Image (cartoon, rainbow over all chains, first blue to last red):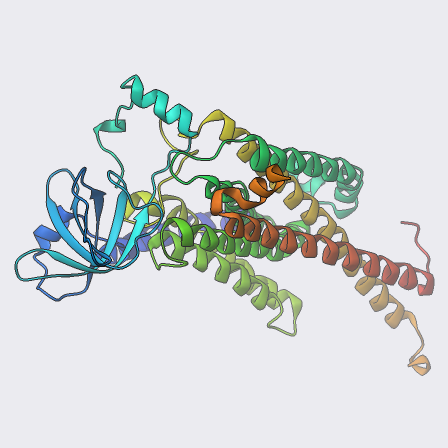
Length: 151
Length: 249
Length: 59
């Protein structure tokens, strides 16, 4: 019994040490674990023009403009507080639409616009049929949870 | 509590309890997955954003849940093996590992297939996807360590330690989508405020999750029966060898 | 059969949906078959070892 208790205590204390160590490591790595920066985070960090980063946020309503004669598009990525204008030349993913999450890979120009070399769509965690969504929209029931939409 | 655990840890008793359950578990898995396929592929509506591509969820999510639950089982069995030295716990851990690895591969493969049309990429190294790859390597590392030593016990001890250290990865996988910005979306089911899935889509998801879990249990029991038979063969051969006269060799 | 065609097309995502289900079915199917086969051959081994064993213990 005492040997078992000894091993149990040993295991639990090793677990605590491991947990603390892991927490510290992940805190330290926080920056590298982030897949993208929101416009606000990007503004805080003041990335140099040309520095390769990923920018993520929601596509602002009515901000998408397509070029008439090429695959070029312009749109605004927002996190509510800050906006960034993004230009992209290429094919957008199926889920790219207004008010949907996107992650753009690329870099800032000196004037603050973001040139994307790749655009990825991010979808939210809500799954429902189209009719239900339409009904919710009609009733104006589409409250954004916790006051923030996921981006 | 310890006594009850000890009784269940008796291999003969385990076989007596688990073996008759096996056909019922198999039937349950078949029924759940059959209904899940019907509701998932035919009856449920397409998603308002993702259309029919959202149906990949009904295999991706159950596989991922079971990959995580399997690792939790592996870690718990390893802890019991380490503290209470129950031989059945080591048998269970050894049998869970390859099954968990297969479920992880399914989760990664179907996720990648889902990501291409929706996200616009097969793969990114965000925190969620990366931590699931780490999970696969933990499973594979566990299996490799088991067989890395001539002495079976040495391998088991090394693998048990790896299984326990690797348990750190479980909360990282679960909460990676909340702690860091990821391309992967946050949780839909296990979250505060209840699931954000329409009931018509929740039904096939839960049926498939139940079916996958029963199939996992079925496979674990089959493999444990096999492993216990193997250990008995080894024991019989050892005694036969010890009892045979030297001239026999 | 336009209905079957539409079902297989999965709103244009047929290749993705069906390949995801096919990979899942393939891996799970192989896993079940391999596990059952391993058990069968190990039980045959066990029978053999028990036959050969000097003291035949009933199990």
